Image (cartoon, rainbow, N blue to C red; front, side):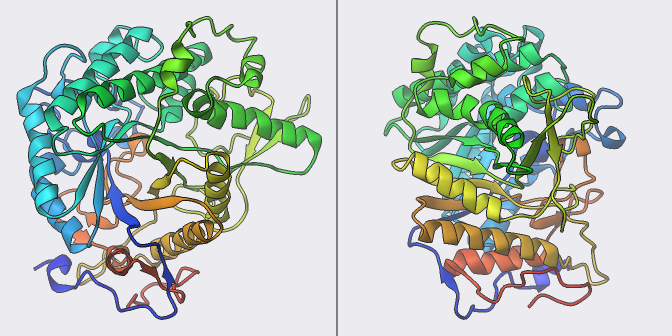
Length: 495
């Protein structure tokens, strides 16, 4: 008998709790390549992450997502876990090459059938499906044709969106086009630490534009195909950019990173066009002639909500001539920068507590980000579509996993969300990253973000203490005011 079978998934009723608004959505999230496995099953073909993971030296110890945590076969068990956690919604992504193996043309019905079964299982459990069209796993055949730096990929993406809307639009209301296009463009085509592993700053900027364009075309396709028009969004890993000092030089460095980290997406998606300072910052790399007439209008489609992903703030300074440049941006080791046009900017990690990823724990960044974005776009509801932390989880002798650090992390960040709401930010929900321990991209299986522990040998699922704690918050809509703000020393138990 496992710990998940012997321990309840509910927490004691909190006292003097912070109450979230009625209807606030509590969820958790995953991504297809990180959890599904079944890489060659039912007609699925390789994505860029299959190719990248199978390339020696690209992923920690040669790990791949071939099996991952076998969500493809074990989804019913995973939905049962979500139901026991009392979640309102499950945010998952679709594997493009599972439902459209060549990235174009007709659908693979067996692939679509998996997502039909998953959606039906969720609905039966009373859990709203929140579908993400793209979480970084471009079909390899489209990458072979040029990938996101090519305009045709944006057009294929819109066709893929229409295909999924036709198959699932009668049961799925909440759709997200892209997850973290910054990572797709700048880690995939700039620094090369993510698939497809290219290191070309011009290709990265071209990819950014065509991801934007793909988003806009997909929104148009979804609006046309969905019976109700859907509730449509994009999820952005917006950077809470902070200058290291109050100097003019460091403030200028922050402006440059804000341009290529945030406004490169927010400008065309929500404000009618790219910011002029972005063009000026990157002028030595490209003249942006790949932006055609009408593109910015196509990108700027009406959205029903905006997903905000947050883990840690970004602290920057200007690099003086001849000064050594630290690379502490937390986006992997590479000789190539993921920040086109920002060669004179240095990145710093703040002192203090860090997660297993080495990321500083700073919930004030989430508060600042939510209030700033909500003030700038007051008519656009926000959802925290990813937030969570990796820690060095240890399985106890009884099979349980006590993770007080993760409880403290999530408590502090939910407290920041609650404070942002109280101060006027229109935040409608929170998705914990992640439901399950899984394949953490270039880190392979070395980093664990899950609320549910996965034994990678047996694939047995065991809810951690943080899962039981989050279940209590989700069921009551209340955040305990006496939540542990500092990590406790093991083996002290969370009750």
